[in-house]
Amino acid sequence: MKRPSSNPSSGNGRPVTSYQSYQSGGSNLPAGYQPPIHYASDQTRTLEDTTKTYYQTDETSQQVLQTLKVQRQQLGSAHDDVWQMRQATEQAKREIIELQKKYRRKKQKLLVTIAALSMLDLLLLFRILQCRGNFFC
Image (cartoon, rainbow, N blue to C red; front, side, top):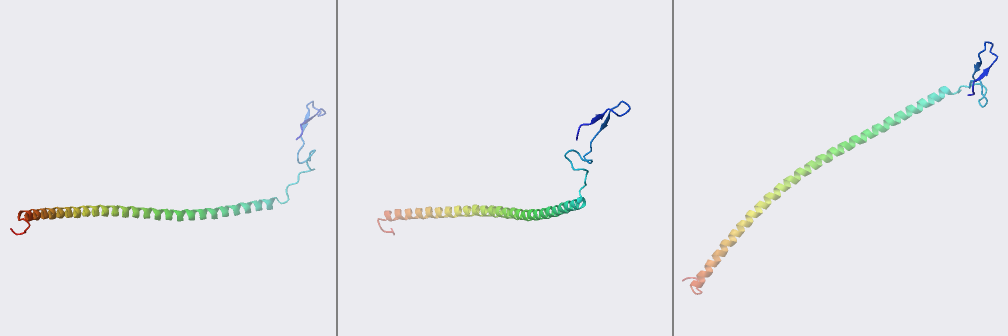
C-alpha cells in the first residue's frame, strides 16, 4: 500500500487524503480484484479431505482401542497365570517342607535303630568274650 498523498486543492484548506485500494489495481497488482472462481469447489474439497481425515482417524483410533483391549486381556491373563504360579510355588514350598520333616523323622528312626543294633552287637561281643569264644556259657 502506498503512502497517503495530500491534495492541496481540496477547497476548504484541508488536504484530502486518498488511499489506493488493492482492488483498484496498484503498481504491482493486477487491474481489479478477481475472486477465486472455484471457491465453493475448493471449500468442498477441503471439507471432503477433512471428513476423510476424520474417518481415517476414527478408524485408526478404533483399531488402537481394539489393540489396547486385546493387550488388556493378555495382561489380565498373564496376571492370573502369575497368581496361579505363585499359589503353586507356595504349595510346592509347603510340600517340600513336609517332605523334609518326614525325611528327618525317618532318618532319626534309622539312627535310633542303628544305635540299638550297635548296642546289641556290642553286648553280644562282650558275651562271646566272657564265655571265651562260646556263645553259651
